[in-house]
Length: 198
Ligand code: SAH
Image (cartoon, rainbow, N blue to C red; front, side, top):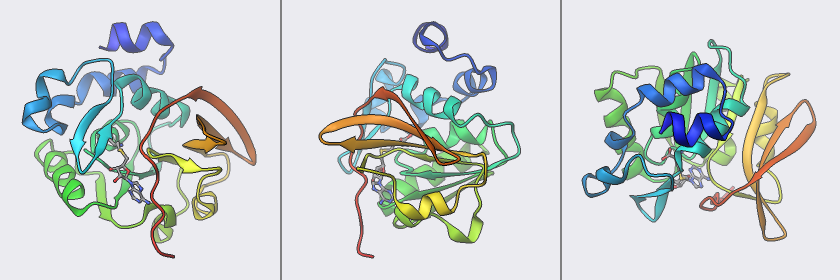
């Protein structure tokens, strides 16, 4: 997977590649899906949600340009896989999931693996985690309509990147925001970021 799906397709951050090599992707999947863990695609994880394709997970991690000591926020824990990858390349990960069942599953695997620098929270990730801000990077793994939720920008440290898929007039693009600048990276498909009651 690392050679064929990642390195050959432009993932070059060695810390990201090492993390992708280290984290056992199959353990984050329901048992009947495990034989498909290293395929070049997204996979079902329950509650109608999906775990992203390996390349997307690596690409999003690389876009954050982490050095190693940052606290990173992830919105959309899902299986916990992307949080696990991030936890190998930063100081601490706070990850938020709407579904209690998914959050609980993620917590369990992360703890079995001894990845104890990840905190899984249940709630509306669009509000971020103001008690732990500012973040040295924010990764949103569900598609926001038009733009990422405003509270996330407020919780971003100066110079830090916010990576988020955005739906613009029906076109879904992975965007990176940093210091007031935005950059379109690649067309993507994610599940929608659900807006809960304010
Ligand atoms: N990063 C995940 C993929 C997650 S799929 C992985 O590695 O497996 C996107 C997840 O975002 C889903 O689990 C969905 O329930 C969650 N989600 C959608 N809207 C949300 C919101 N407002 N707050 C928190 N989680 C949300």
